[in-house]
Length: 412
Image 1 (tube, rainbow, N blue to C red):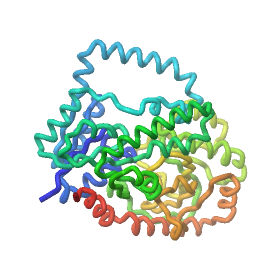
Image 2: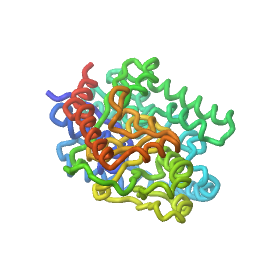
Image 3: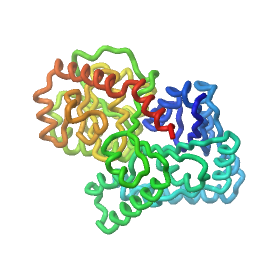
Image 4: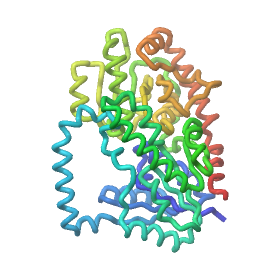
């Protein structure tokens, strides 16, 4: 008999266009014969409904419950007024905040630590629990971290922490120009609320050892249970023999992407652009402000959103200058399994190497280290790095191993 788990999430599981989607779908699909996931989510737009229909088409056996917030929103004149007000506020602030949008301490996402769920939505979740006779509830992402306060004592509560909020803020602290008292206000209240919520969980899942060490003193039970890349995103390709360009994967909507890419461009790539033979292709959605900033450099190409990364793997080197965040780097997993060599900051590769096994990644944390890498790495060594990365992925992120770990999470 399969273990039944109610999965409550506000981040779409499908299509596989983000790390969050991959992290969820990997287990929803991979454990379908052993775990009966009951999927529960709100939908706030027609696009989210279309994505939900797409999930249903690829996994017709998955039982799905959704709370439709669209009709309530459409029928509410107050809602329409609030949306209009919000749009005016966002528009008025955009010019002020645009140049600082890589700063977590000026990102409204971190201003409010809790979430304002409607009474109808919380009743809806509890109705699903009763109807399906749920004994285990799994909440994914910070957006659901306080939902367990509304759940009955009769269910076991599991929280999947995709990105430790307090850790991300600690890492971005020194990069913010905001006054120290304000930064302390933001970080301390976020940390306090995060801890209060995590103490409500019977088990907390994280993706790397550092996150586990940080949170273990406040959690009843913590498990390191990383994900890997779904089969449909793995292409059977040979590692390249020669290399002509860097690729950066990710859009500016995720603040660590913008902070990291601009640091790399401003501190490393542009000052040494004449000596660097590799062009840079940025894949993902980026605003005009950033693109215009680097328009004069013909080696830098912003390609926007692409349907598939696969065509850009050939002769490519992944550049991963991530400085903040938490969790696991999906972009590194994708490139390792697809035999693409990786150059990364040490923090940016967190969870993808260890002290005894790191030769599959080239590391740099400043311009001097990056220049030294380029001066010493040959095409042959990059090819070997790609092969080692693939071997590391197969050993550390083998499907059987990861599915077994996640299945054990549901054993109480």
